[in-house]
Length: 145
Image (tube, rainbow, N blue to C red; front, side):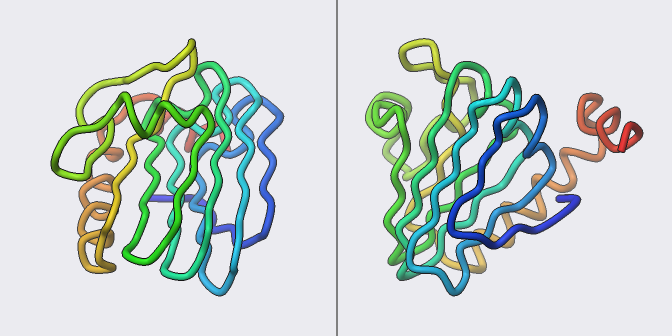
């Protein structure tokens, strides 16, 4: 589903659509921080926070709400700003913001999946890949690359 995989301690998305279509993977890192501040910068993006890593995602405005998925594997520490995305957009299943766009203080929150096994994450990534095949915004993005 993604056009690139990024592995870095800090990833900055300050330009419009700057992180769109990528996967950020924390593998082999103790800490990663992602700032999604540009317009629509983190839409259609995956963040994988693995066991032993502390991950922080900072979102503003509409930047993290459209097909932005934050996968928090077992043993990972996942933070988000605004922190209320974790407390106000959840349900009992561990899926936070599962079926709708949830906004906190004017910020669209990503879909946050907590306490995942690697196999569960891989299944969710495969399901997302299938959904994106018919997503007009994503298909237009691919054409413009």
